Length: 146
Image (cartoon, rainbow, N blue to C red):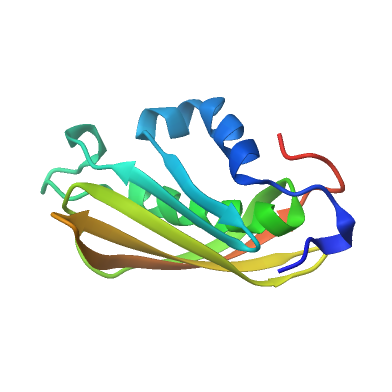
């Protein structure tokens, strides 16, 4: 997918720097694995601090992983973005070793980016689909992501 309006876009290296400066993503232990051409993938290790009273990963954390996957995919074609809206479907309890978020841009313009993400809970190398998201993001202009 081509960058919109020729603006600077986020690369894997740029996103790693941004994530390193984000206190919440540092707390989550988020690691970006892919960020290019309208696609992003991240991993978050599951630990007790991220769970709710039943031992499942808290829905807010699952939602954050999905939102990051959408936003980081969008940033790879639109530069700096903000999430304007999303719909999250929680499909199954998230338990395991880590969460994987996989985002993709569905359509991008200079005003709006529509993206989707799926979140998987990985346990012993096996993935279980636990959530899906559809998001609308707003490019912040022709500026370098920060």
